[in-house]
Amino acid sequence: MSTDTENVSKDRRKYEFRKVIEELREYEGSGTQLVTIYIPPDRQVSDVVAHVTQEHSEAANIKSKQTRTNVQDALTSIKDRLRYYDTYPPDNGIVLFSGAVSTGGGQTTMVTRSLESPPEPIQSFRYHCDSDFLTDPLENMLADKGLFGLIVLDRREANVGWLKGKRVEPVKSASSLVPGKQRKGGQSAQRFARLRLEAIDNFYQEVAGMADDLFVPKRHEIDGVLVGGPSPTKDEFLDGDYLHHELGDVVVGKFDVSYTDESGLHDLVDSAQEVLADQEVMKDKAEMEEFFEKLHGGEEATYGFEPTRQNLMMGSVDRLLLSEDLRSDVVVYECPDEHEEYEVIDRRHDDPDHTCSDCGSTSEKVKREDVIEYLMSIAEQRGTETKFISTDFEKGEQLHDAFGGIAGILRYATGI
Image (cartoon, rainbow, N blue to C red):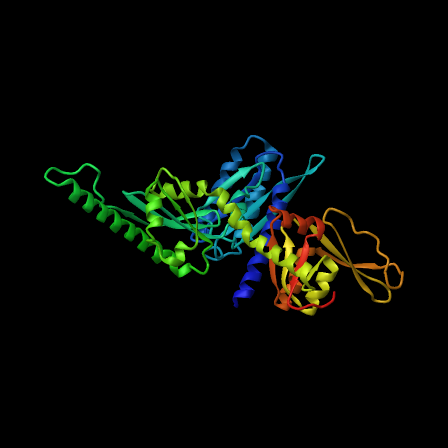
């Protein structure tokens, strides 16, 4: 599979996950009867079936008859779903949701959903029964902040790792041989100071070597490097140019952190939230800046549903820009003279009546579809890259509010 195809599939999969999560968040149970199970990829399905069977047995002790019945029905539904899987779940694991959700007026309906191969591997088995489905771990996976290298160090120890999305992954650690400030008897102050500086230099080189080994092979994928520790250690390390020059160029921030063990990596990420938020949206900003340059400086930009659809059909769109907050459907109409037209409407609204703009005849609905999925399907067929744009900055808001959440950067001008 080509990289472009992988990116398209990844974007589509993330969007599909996001849609299901938004749906699941809307559901409520009348009691603690909505069951969520997170299954990591290395957990045998038979073990999960045994756990579900045990939970089903223990649910017999629930005092409320309705809650007891609903929980047991949910567990039975999950057990039935698990029969479709072999020894282990699919890549990255699987999440199962099942329960009787409220539909109003005291009525409920049974809902069962399975989400296979989430964007990141599920780290541990988790069974959750509550009045809401547990979606936070999946939402954290989708809130992807890219790939960042992490370094925390003082003169005693250092840890190096990754920030992948919101997941901190410790990888390497080192302890120093730097002597304390108190010299031993018989040593001159100058000699002791020289030996101590040499030990510090050697330790910084060791830490830089760990970082280079880990980060340099990923230098074309990495979004930045974060460095943490007490002053002056982190400043000495960066100012001394110990890091590979390609890594030094992508250091996006240095931060004071109190700990330099594995917990220090988490402290570093917490301290860098503002920088990370800025980095996350930088790519979106660059896309929108290019869009506005093309829009104002020539004809290699398009916006709105119909012009963008036509350009996509022609294969002239290089990148399709879609607002992350776009929540609309497209209704396709056809009149007796076979003229096809489209209306984009709020997802919550019913189908509007439609009169053909060419012949004035009443048109019939042919289909209704999520507008993002509709456009992405055309984009995939034409080799067009899809970019989802955040509304966390001004031009991202403009895409949603002023351009209907749909735009494109063209390969060439089409006049449409």
